[in-house]
Image 1 (spheres, rainbow, N blue to C red):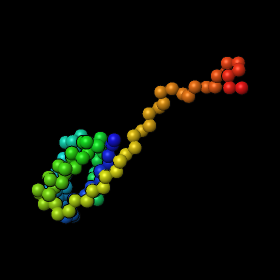
Image 2 (image 1 turned 90 degrees about the vertical axis):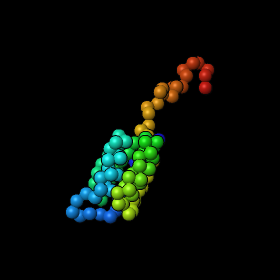
Image 3 (image 1 turned 45 degrees about the vertical axis):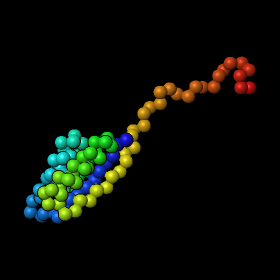
Image 4 (image 1 turned 90 degrees about the horizontal axis):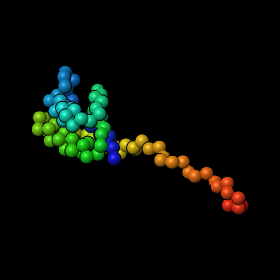
Length: 99
């Protein structure tokens, strides 16, 4: 299963990137997740075990350097459906079959 996590840390700092946001971003990058950093939060996606383990480190790391609030949303990402191994067998043309 793949998960997408969207999170933001507070307090916001309009003059720069706060240490708790840098700590959270570093954890996500070190985990090797697909990351998109936006102006109001960060999105990361990967396999469920990696995302959940990284999330624990995000909480601990950001809180340790001053975060007072961490907002998170987790979403299960549907796996791309694999092509079927073989097509359904066609109706038999054997005389007498199915008539």
